[in-house]
Length: 605
Image 1 (cartoon, rainbow, N blue to C red):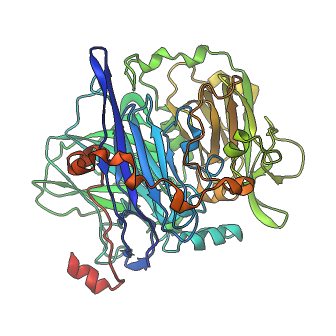
Image 2 (tube, rainbow, N blue to C red):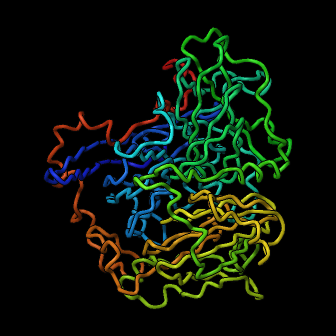
C-alpha cells in the first residue's frame, strides 16, 4: 500500500479592506480527498507520501496577506507535521509545524493550520518535518503572489511554472533513516526527479525505456516565470535549460537584481524563480537538467532530465546534455552565490522599496558563531552537532512548555561560540533578544555542502568565504544589497555570515536542511520573547494538540472540531468557483495506481 497523507482540505480567508468600503469576507473552500495509491518510479514499485493522492502535492497558490486554513488528516502509520518553509508565521509560531512548536498529528487524526502570509511574496514549499519523511515525498510548492496594487519589477510573465527537483532513493524514508542512525552513507541515489518524474531518455545506454518523464509545454516567443525548489535530501543540484538564459528575479521572497545565468546551483531547501523567454527555434525540444554537484563519477547516471517542448517543435530532444560546471569545483558555486544581490528599488510585499530597510546601518546586538561537525558517536549513537550540542527533541514541544511554564523541558543556555568540552545531547535553546539585530556565522567543518534554514524570518546573507571565520572577516561583508532569504548554503571548509532582525516573537527553528544532518540533531531553537508577555503574539490556538507532560489536557479526537463540519462551510456550495484561488496543482504529477504491474501502467498512458 502506498503511504499517503489523508484528507488535505484547503480554505482561504480573504479580508478585503478599503477606506470607502465596509469590510467583507470571501471564503473559498477547496476540498481534496485522499485515496490509496502506488507509483512506479524508475521502473520500480515504490511507496511515496502523497497529498490528496498526488506526488508531489498540490501547489498552495495565495496572495500577500491572505489568511490560509489547511486541514490535514494524517493517514500515515506514524506521527506527522507539515511545515511551510519560508512562510514567516508572523507572531504565530504555533503554526510553524516543527517539533519545537507543535505536538505531532497522531496517525488517524486531523489538525487544522490557520496562518496568514503577512507581508510576503515569493516562491517556497511545504513538506513533512518529522522522521525523515520528506525523503518519501509529501512536499508541494507555495506561490505567494503580489497584491494587484504592488507593481512587480518585470513585465507580467505569460505563464507560471513550478519545478520541484530532488534526488530520489527507491528505499523508503524508514529504511533511509535507519541507515543514517547506524552511521551508513546514503550513497548514490537511484535518480533525480522533476515534479516526481524520472529522466527523459537522453541516452539509451543510461536511461531505460518506459520511464515517465516531465514535458514542459510552452509557446514560442512567450516569457515564463519558472520557480525551482530543491526539495531533496542532501544533494546540491545544478539547474539549467539547454540554449536558454535564466534571468534570476526572485529567491525566497526577495526580488533580486536581474542577471543572466546559464545555470544555477540550487542547494537543499533553496528556491529561486527565473524569467525564461522561448526565443529559440523549434527544430527540436530542449533539455531541462538537474545534475548533482560536488560528487564523484559514480553519480554520473543520477541526472534529472525533463523536456522543454515548444508547441511548434519539429522533433524530440537529442544529443548530449548541456555541460555542467566543473563538478568538483566549489569556487564556481561560491562566486555565483556572491553574485546574487537584493533589488533595492523593487517593492516586495509592501509599496516601499526593499532597500528602504538599511540593514547595514543597524547596530549588532548579539553575535553567534555556530560550528558544525560531521556525525560522531555520542553515548553510542550517531549524532550531529552545532557548537558541540546535538539537539534532543523533548516529548513536550518547547512552545507549549513555555506557554504553561513547564520546568525542565529545555535550557536557555546555547553557547554563542563552540565550547572546549565533549559533545553532548541536550535541549539547549538560544535565549534571543526581542527586536535585537543578530549576526550569525555558520562555520562548516564538514566535508559536504550544508544548508541552513531559519523559520520565522528572512536574513541577510552578508558574506561567505573559505577558511575559518575571524573578526577580520567582516571586512568583506556586503552591507548594502545582500539578498534577504531564509535558506543559505555553507560550503565545506568555509563560513557564511547572516544578519537578522528579531522582530517576530515566538519559538523559531534554525536547522540544517540536509535531512541526514537534521535528523541526527543539527538544529537549535531561538526563543524570541517580548518582555511584555503575550501582547505581540497570537494566543494558543483552541485546537492545540497536547502531548508529553501536558497530555492530560488533550481532548479525544472525536470531540475536536471537524473542519469539514464547521461554520467555514457557509460557502461550500461555491467550491467550484474558488478552487483556482485556493490551490493550483502542478500541471504534471505522478499517477497513482492500484498495483505495481508495469504493463497496467503502460496501458493506462
